[in-house]
Length: 119
Image (cartoon, rainbow, N blue to C red; front, side):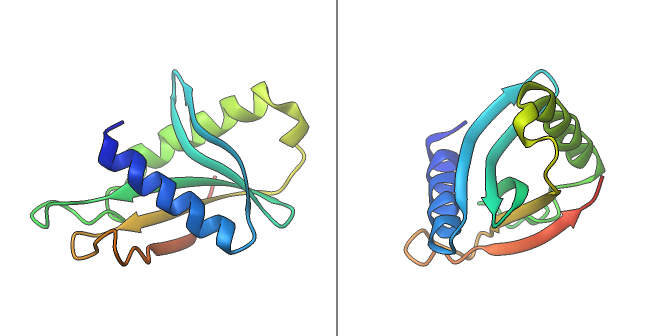
């Protein structure tokens, strides 16, 4: 992960905590992929993918979570639940927090897509 990527993930985590979420894990890596943030939104377990785009010539940050990326996140989430069975009985969802090129870290209000895709 780049320093800039880590900075955006930190901002995303702070943004979630300000909304009452509890951050459980960050940057959990598996062979199948990585989970940027694993958090609790009340009683629901949420796998949060943080995306940023700095070049407007490429697809937007939200568009970059394509079917292939979603599949990797699903595999990583399954690996997470196998490794952490204490969370396996919780309702789960996948959210995306995106930072687009027009945004600066000074005003880092992200684009939040709740339940961006389903398993």
